[in-house]
Structure formats: C-alpha cells, structure tokens
Length: 278
Image (cartoon, rainbow, N blue to C red; front, top):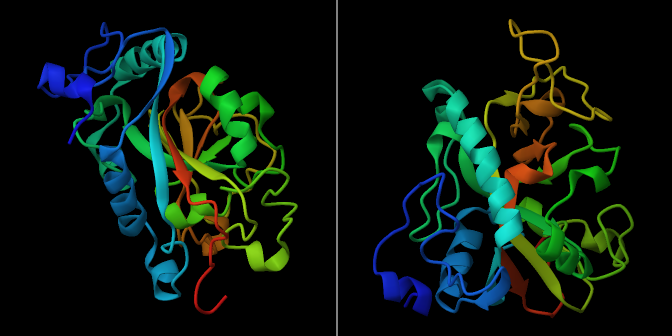
C-alpha cells in the first residue's frame, strides 16, 4: 500500500526539469520527513537482492531487519539536485556507458533519468551523522582524503558494502569499536542507519586496474576534451579496480549537489551477525 500522497495522485511521477518534487511526495512543507510503511518490504527485498554473491555464500549482510524507512523532502536540496540534473541531461551520455553501469536499484514509482545516468545507490554511515545529511545533504568537502578512488563521497549498488559503514555512533570503518569482528558489519548494539540516495553519475570514469587515484579531489580529465574538463564521477568495478582486487562496486562523486538522500533506512538495533563463517 502506497503512502497517502501517492494514492491521492494515482499516477507515476514523470521526469520534468521544471517539477519541484516527485509526484509521490507529500510536498506539504519545505523540509519534512515522512515514514513510509510500504517501503519496509521494498527495502528488505533490495537488501536480499543487492547483496553480492560472495557475501551471500558466507551468509554476510542478509540477516538484517528493517525497522523503518523515511522519505526526506527538502525543497532546497531538491532544487539544487534538479538544477544539476538538467545540466547533465543536456550532455546526454552514450548507450554504451549506460549499459556498462549495469542494473541499478529500483524504487516503486520512482522514474530515473537515463540521459544523465541517474541511479539509486546505497550509502552507509554512522547513525549520528544522518541528521546532518537530512538537513544539509552529503557534503563531499568533508570526505576523507585517504579514499582509494579520490576524496569524494562513496556509494555502492551492493548492500553488503554499505552495511560495512552503517554503524552506531563512535564506531566507524577505520576505528571499529567492535574490533575485527565488526569488519563486515557493526557488531555494536545501538541504532544503525543507511541511506538510499538518488545519484547523478553523468559521464563516469571507469577505474582501470593500474590507476592510482587516492587523494584526488576530482575525477580524471576526459581524453580528447578541452584541457581541464573532467569526468562527472568515478566507478570502481568489482574485479577490475585496485589491480583487479576490488571486491565490491563503488561509485564516487565529487559534487554535493549531484546526490539527493531521499530515503533513510533504520535497521534493527540489535548487533548484526556478520555471517556463519565470520
């Protein structure tokens, strides 16, 4: 059953650069958070369907229960996002690029713009950081400069990767309060949250096995383009990037306005079991 705002309209949203917000939004105020019960089952299915085969084999990341899902409606963040979407749409990426990005996460009734490679992606983070994101977005200026593929904001289309970063306050991937047992998932008791975001990939750069991008503040330059013109994002593919040692797919953006954190997923507060062999 869809939320009241969608039911009232009864039609799917359309891509329209002049639209102020998706038609299934409530649109009652400039900033609001709305719990969507129907999305709990949707997200639970996404968790199962977007866990990579290797993690499924070891029972990692799938024993997670979704407690609630909330939709974030923020007029300012959305206006900024739409402006960037319109600009990227004008560039129109080619079909080969879109095909290589592969299957993306699907949300009922949400229409994505393939001309600018708009996708839904996961983002895991400590739960005490979510309030900041809701109010001001995901700010790449706060990105860690030791990121393997540049100092940007990282996303993934694989739930098992996002879950590694969905942690309680004071526990993070580089300083795990739960120790080595928390490598694949936070083992601490307490609130854990993840984001399901709209992301504009535009014309992405696909990382090569030999690339060294750590510390870069922007994507690589485009070959054959005017000097200084860079790609719009970076994609590190499993089995290709990092000398073919990359385990999960990662997507990196360097512009805070090309991401909209639309859905906040709250997980059960109990410790997550990493898997039967971990």
